[in-house]
Length: 251
Image 1: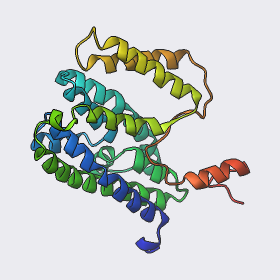
Image 2: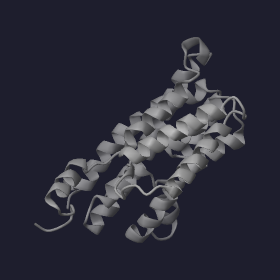
Image 3: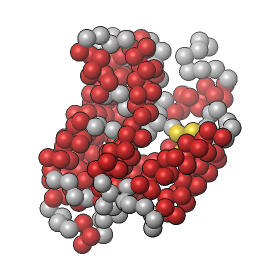
Image 4: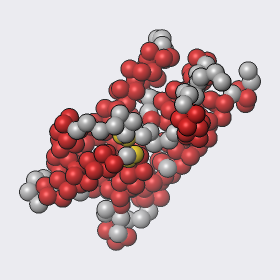
């Protein structure tokens, strides 16, 4: 099969462009939150997990410590470890590819890969989305960081709370179902109540603890929860759900 004819390649490429462009906002918000250009690039290159990166700079912008910022980022990045176990069994990378695959295991590369039924297409989709987003995300992060450096004091432009707003904008559309929305509201309330009494950065850890406790004792529907940032096969999955078949079933 020619590369241009591969559905996984086309989906992975389109997601790479759409997601990579969002790196502009991270770069700009990072430098206006107090990180310099090289710190921003190191965070983007080494951490490479959009939600975790926004959580990190959100804590930093609020005056939180480095430990609190890393704790918040780690909590959100734990899902990539779960993806990694699934993809390791699915793709079975060998040698240096295992390290590369681990680094580009994110929501989008996971969704693109697992949306395919052919093993070759699964690998092609994973690497196209993973490497494509890595290159474009970091490229546009640099563009955003350079633009943000020219803005000066973030408070002058009302950007001191923009990192938190951007993270919420990234998170909220992914909440599907009444139970996760209710948990999010409870966690938000816990965060607001904790802010006056604990150092900056700690409220998000309080919210994570509350979410873990509530999630442990709740018994919601198994199909409710956090959705990937991008589902490239949303229409196919919805049609399959209505027909009662999985996307890979033969008709």
